[in-house]
Image (tube, rainbow, N blue to C red; front, top):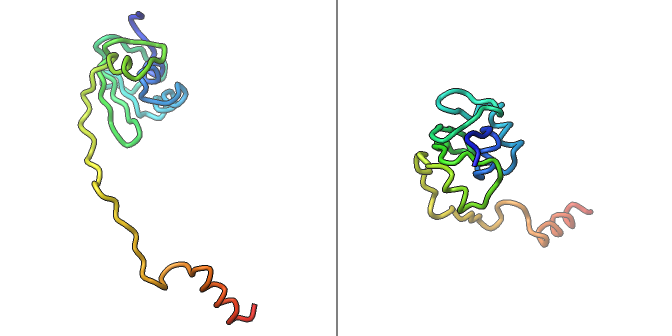
Length: 121
């Protein structure tokens, strides 16, 4: 077990990003902080470090428990950090159903053939 790891490698290993290059790009883009300071990809993290990362549309606040460098399965990855992130916003329970009135929107194939016949095509 290493005593420190690169932040881009650690974020990839604990499955916050799908690839190490994506986590490095997030670091270069200013989306990752270690202990309150903007992190470069090579910034080291150790036990007790706080990593704040923008992952998708969420802000994740993670405390490093195990600075791993190899990607592990999801059940093992969860044990490598403590998640202090705020809960995600609630999703809408039911998606609105798109209902259109007859005749609104695109014509059906039958209606299109009638239009073409009227136009003389």
